[in-house]
Length: 405
Image 1 (tube, rainbow, N blue to C red):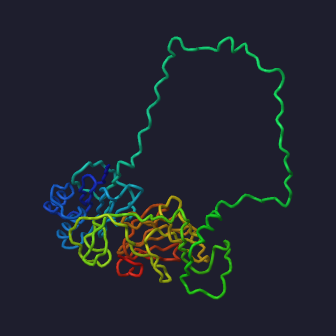
Image 2: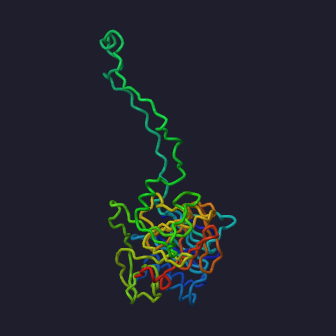
Image 3: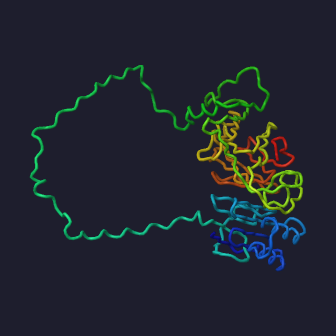
């Protein structure tokens, strides 16, 4: 693990896979308790993150004004933020800050920290597995030939001759002239999805959000795949994709039996306090739902792709829900936004869209998402696609219709 920090008025504590950036509680005893939990010199009855949050909530008599926690221990990564604390995901890296996720005008110089407690306002944590390998060393020069090795062509080979005259000509197959009727025209437009790929997507079920009309909608300006009403494609995967691909996670149970992350002190569904217990590995449950402007909730049991012509994102590990937006939203791209699941986290990525995406976290100012950068969503976060189509991430009772458990 490689950690670098920028000096500030907060406090960074960490060692190994556990790191905490928090507003200064101005109480050395509290910092010593947190340090003992992070270094596991103090017995831990639940998860390290849960114990740390409990200590800080007691110190601040409620939620800390700014807190960011990252746990990269075996079994999957998790992060928690409170108040102005923010955790940004950049590939395998985690960036902790106390500015609510705002972009600083100028990045302060950073210093390396192996472990300890320092005054800081920002920290960059990079697992060693993501470090760039050193350049290979130059190859050693070839050794000189040993005595007795052949260092020339024998005279008998030089004096040998081949057959007289040129080699016989090979017979050629007659080439039939191409008739005008067989002209295939110009090359296909590579900016559109492969038609055969889109046909496989459309083989599955098709659910309309609005009540279906009697007349079939006419094709839009971009072809028959555009339409006037927002729809959700939930295609059945091809036969070779029908095996189970559910990710497993470490989980604990609340008194009502709901599964939740071991790093959370309360249940993500019913908000009840979770008693200390040994986490167990289970199939990941749905992490809530994505509420569309029409009122329909898309379950987050897998990823979601939104756009005028959505398709599965290359390299994604699951077969996503495909949310087709109305074709008259011209500033919404064909492939606009990707929602993906990583352990217990829900991530959002703008797919370099034309109109962009505005992200609004609860209690924070809206910010424009950078293309292809992952943002960790909190329940209640809203995403505005090109300022014409807004969706909201919901969990708990608000998303009860999608089968929380």
